[in-house]
Length: 101
Image 1 (cartoon, rainbow, N blue to C red):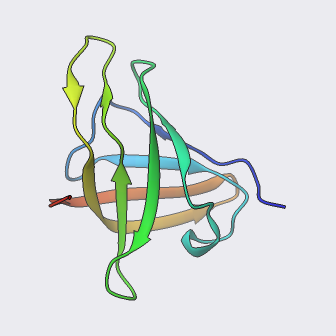
Image 2 (cartoon, rainbow, N blue to C red):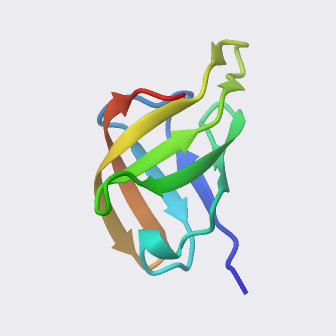
């Protein structure tokens, strides 16, 4: 049985250096579900996937969504610069934006 997993951002959009907290009881990134919801600070929502780029680097892919102020953001991919587990989930720090498509 897979655990419920939800990611939270303290911003309405993501950028290099942004932190995303993944609330989960999974012990590491490899044990997260294939996709999971992301909730942004303005209440907007999307879906994210964590992928292994080259066998060891993680990439967070966030599907396109609209912010609460109706700004449309296309699908974006971000290098995961750091992943810090704690008792309630995993904190991600995003690195550079990567090409998608």
